[in-house]
Structures are given as structure tokens and as C-alpha cells.
Image (tube, rainbow, N blue to C red; front, side, top):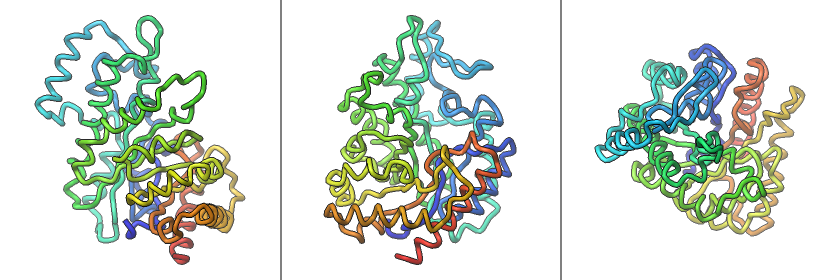
Length: 344
């Protein structure tokens, strides 16, 4: 996807209450790969787990967020799988109450000249992060409930398919990011996930999406076993915190070599969010990118492959930041993108 090289996009969340204000920021600073914004400050429904809970069996929304309630488990599972079998995408739609930014984004795109838009980015919370947010009636994390995990994977896949159908009217390439911050804990004693189960789950989630010709990315804002994603053949883009964890990713250079070989892309989360400092310069960000590229080349990866398959983003979502700093992040991102494209 050389036409995307050096372009900027976002992760998802923005710190606004007004959907239109968030959309205008997205279109101003990420005009070529715009994304629909999540607004967790607007409503509890827009939290990264609650936002995708509509249609999920046994998940109920309260004033504190989404909770697991197994009272009518059999009936809810029956209704759920009926909708799966009938390919009823509307059952899994994300409603405007849960995603004001999605609908404001859609309406605004319909009024704009989209000639310069290369792709539209959508997103979903990944199944492991989603399930990690719930415990059953015995206090056991639902990550270990095979029936529930299967339902989560199916439901999230359907929600992505609904998004693809929803935005298809614009005739643009669709990019879908699976947001999996929980996998930053992978390998610790507190996260007893089996590597094969993670790869299998990601593959099951993405198989039908891949058939829609969408590009599939995965976002993990901490460090993880990056070979999980390089070994999941349906994943096209790996998004990582390039400001904070570039050295950790470089340990997987041989896995990345194979990933680039099959057309994979890296989305460099180059502007820090948690550690954001208004004094950060564009030159510092470009230097970091060039250092990373040079390190990958030294490890035997072709420079052209790296540069042609490189897009940029903030390190993570910006939902908890102050609005003024969020705009500074995107201004830096946009300037870094423009400067990097001139170096290609």
C-alpha cells in the first residue's frame, strides 16, 4: 500500500464532549486517513468496552459502565446466534447513543469533497481487552469462559462488518484497527493467556473481515510479544508506541522481515500521549523514525520496504488528555507526516 506511505491517522478516542468538534480536528490533521472519534468524556457508553456491548449476550450497561449478568444466559445466547446465522448486521450496529462521533463523522464525510481521502479508518476493541473487563458470578475473568469468548469474537467481527457496510458508500479503502491494550500484559504471571489461543482468536475475528478487502490493523500501546501479530496472517498493520517502545519492537526484526515480505505495514505511534510534553519538536520525532528505520535496515530489512509501508499515529488514544494538548499532538503528527513524506 505504497500510496499510504507517511500518512497520518489516529487511534480512536478524543477528549471532547461535542462530536462535531472532534470530527473537525480529525479532518484537519488526518485528512487522508480520517477516523471516527470515540468520545469517552461525553458518555459512559463511549468507554472502549461499553461502546461495543450492544448485542452482546449477558452484557448490561449501568451508570458505572458495562457489567456481566448471566441471568438469562441461554435465551440471550439463542437470540445472539440466531442473528449470527441470519447474518443480521443491524443486530450488531453501533447506535448513535454509543458513538456520537461515528455518526457525526459519517454525516460530515457526506458533505465533503473526498478526493484526497486515501482510506477511512474504523476500529473495534479487541476480544481479549473486551473480555478482560468482566468477571462471572464467581469472580472469574471471562477470558477463561470459552462460550463467552467465542460469542465476543463473533460479535466483534459482526460489528466490524457493520462498519464496513456503513462506510462503503464513500467508495474508499477501509482500514480497521483492533485495539488490544490488554495484550501489553501478555507473558506476565497475571495474564495466563496461551499464545496459540491469542493467535487463533485474532484469526477467527479477522477471517470474515479480510474477505471484505479491508486492511486490518492491531493496536497495542505497550510492549508485547509482537510475533503474535506477525504470525497472524490476516493482520496487515501493526500499530506500536514508537516513541516509548521502539527498542522492544526491534527485538522482533526477523519476524518483521517476514511480515514486510507478505505486504505488512507498521503504524508508528510516534507522538507520545501519556508522556506528552508540549516542548517536543517535529525534528525529534523525525529523528526517532529515522533511527528506527536505520536499525531495521541493519537487521537485514530492506529500507524501501520499511518506508513504503510506514504510516504514523499518536502512541495511543487521547481520551484522557486536555483538549488543547490533544490538538498539539495532532498538529505535531501532521507536521511529522508532511516532513517524512518529503524524505521518501
